[in-house]
Image (cartoon, rainbow, N blue to C red):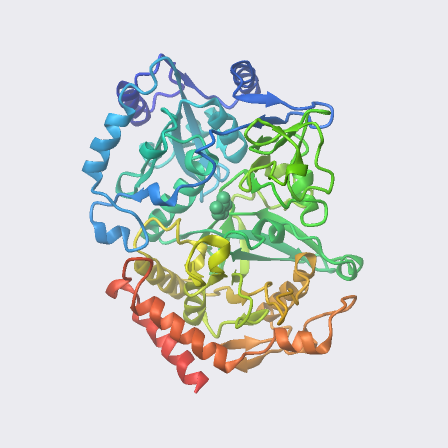
Length: 596
Ligand code: OXD
Ligand code: MN
């Protein structure tokens, strides 16, 4: 029975049920009793396995289908009415055509199944930032994950019903159908505020609050409504005086974003009383506050983190977050003590174990036990360094925006943009260098502007324009920085220690924001003087630090040529076209001029 008298919600649920024809419709009220019942059903059907409840209370293991282990960018669409509004970086199809095609796939696909109706809110529903959605799904796994990743249930319906427009909610439809790869679609209809996902059971494709809503749809809403949805972590740095300053940072995947979000300061900082607080690890919604500063909330309630590589050294806070009430997906099942394991957790792979496929597994044969994209879904509230402001309805004020990628050469450890417009330029050219062998891609820099390439719900050129426009609306804008933790020497070894020691760079960044640190001007922006990076307790030579903070003009001339090609020529197989703001070409010209 419906949990609401909201006509728009009920009409839409009925309409979708008429297409998908579930045997029954169950509304999710968010109560622990109902979730416990669903866990039991999911255990009975074998969809999840209960782990050792003494060692891992409230924890479960799930395995996806073998063909369904990651997001599918080539099957992800932005179906705006006009193709040009989706832009060159998104797949597009005419919405009417797409609806017709998908309706055939959804038709009767829930026969014999239950449709769950999940009312959810991105960020606390009482927040002025909050956006509401309803996800329909035939997967209990999705319900259980959404219960961790978002706020769900009756509480959300109440807030929607009493909001200015109770018909204003995001309509998410998910069906597992047959998990057929060739019929898998992840489709955003921005103008309809709707998301249709079918033939997948993998988190990033089916937890519709996350990438689909909080980034693709929300970036579109943000442009129309004057705010921003970004692929950013949010953290606070507390200084010995007890003052907390916040930054938000965007990185492409495999750059240690979750690790940075939960950074543990090095001993020399900890002793002085510095602390780092995590507000979010993946997504930030940013708005101009009444005080003219930029304020950020984390729209999510949990972490959907990559398991492999997470350990007590790389990220103890993430690991500790997963010791209770967590759903593990596609990791190794240790049969001896009914716990989990993944590559990089420790050096002791279990002897008696099943791999992510559920097969008997022995690490001695050289195969990987956990899928490289195996995940944990853990409540953010369990993170030892979760910020006291994590659920603050107004969010936290942002002093710095930080961008970065993996660049073995060229890009220094840190630099500051001259102003907002220059910062937008710096963010638009970010990316990581790929070696052809490693990724099967052409070697070179893979640009990933603002780390939003797969997540921007509209034309990337218009997105840059929106960034530039936002800068004009923020009386006290955050300063914009670029960092690169991944510089290597001639033998290919990393020359910056990274991890907790990145705190040393964050300290300089924060000091710059509060006029407490000096800088020198270079052709690419402001760089620290080597003596302004605190290396106390660090075994790093003066020469290495200088190398990390050098701007090599020859390499930067090559870089400028690369940027020119990326702006003016092609983006993947498309062109940016003339929607790329002129200001960005101006910034490129300034860079070229500065390089002489
Ligand atoms: C993620 C991603 O899963 O960015 O967070 O791919
Ligand atoms: Mn992400």
